Image (cartoon, rainbow, N blue to C red; front, side):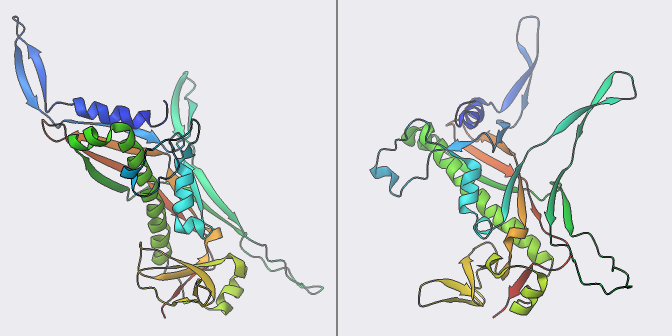
Length: 309
């Protein structure tokens, strides 16, 4: 479909939904039963297909919003641009289902099987000096692999669109604003997903010695300061740092994390699930959107640390 037409079609279908359904007709054509139901509809949007006009300036009401034809930004680019973990070096992966038809039992029947998606991280192999006559020590393969499985919990948001909003601002403007807000929200959800997974792994306290022992380069290290801002300091040059490491603020957690974010990723499911419920006769709507995300972290030695003071 054209730009944002998928979302428009779901919302307009929700506007037409009724809170009841008819079942069965008499011989004279009268309805036998009227059953109550939720006046709602649902659909999905593809992150790969969604494109947005460039981010708007403030004070929208004071300007006429115009965008040249073809000047569109992929939704995935909005997430990359605004995610703090992505700015620190983490990869953002938009993952779609990949069903494959396979034969079953030689009968000609087929089954649709989802092939697992896998994230891999290759580290440096431990190539060490070995004296003549000594055995070469066996070490674990220097590769971290993790299947991308969206097992929850999902991330979601819900908001209202009143008939007055639609009438006053127009559906086109609301759709662009809505998807822009969702893109920014998904960026923040990616930050929460990865930083929560890092915290669950109980990383050790940060020191330059432990970072050096892990094999990361100093230029890989970045810090994200949570709401407690532990260890954060602003230098005379106006740069935020933690223990000398370049830092940025984040509102999604309290802790300060230092790490090689280049060794991590967040997988975001390609499908955004959307439901639209018509709340009243005036046509006021409630829109709910779900997304699935999963953090991908290396196994083995720590590549992330915390700072408490």
